[in-house]
Length: 226
Image 1 (cartoon, rainbow, N blue to C red):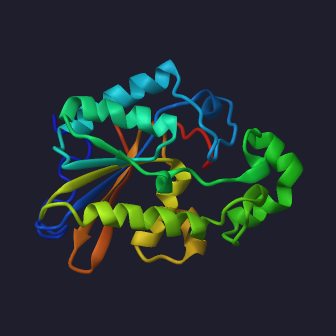
Image 2: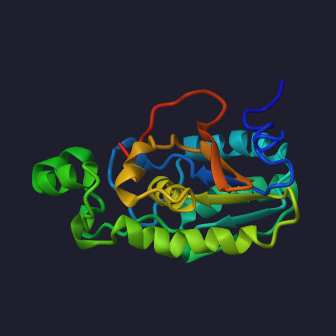
């Protein structure tokens, strides 16, 4: 049985000589389960999250990645370590891949955010530029994260694959930036389930979205991107 994503980027339509980016969200944390906004708070994986990372790593290892870069927050670093253990690749950690800093929102549940910052939340969902909790704009997250991904992608051989281990919000903004979409459209991408990934392939006209929220089986989205 072919693992999910195994054929991503293959074939003339996807660009047979193009590079491939796999943007992989970290495994489950306790705050994901509690629907608490994590942002840049450093929260560890649960035992379930570790199991998710190990299962997903087996699939991603079969895609024969050439390099791994990850956020330096513990939940992403621990997820990346599972793939590194199977592939023998060294993980490069970069704080530019951290999740969005969301100030006073961090640590609040979804319900608490709605109760305390309902107008701000609604404006964000409408695609307006909002500093959630006084934190970063989504465009500022893209400004720091997308260049990290591109810098590592440039080091790949022709047809090479880079695995980027990061966070739901950061991955969404990075995809939007790499696809050249206006920021108000980035919310159109649905959230990533824990330890699921999106695939971008390099074509003659730039990066293309080949898969989104891919994984072993569909799972509910928990966490910052509800």
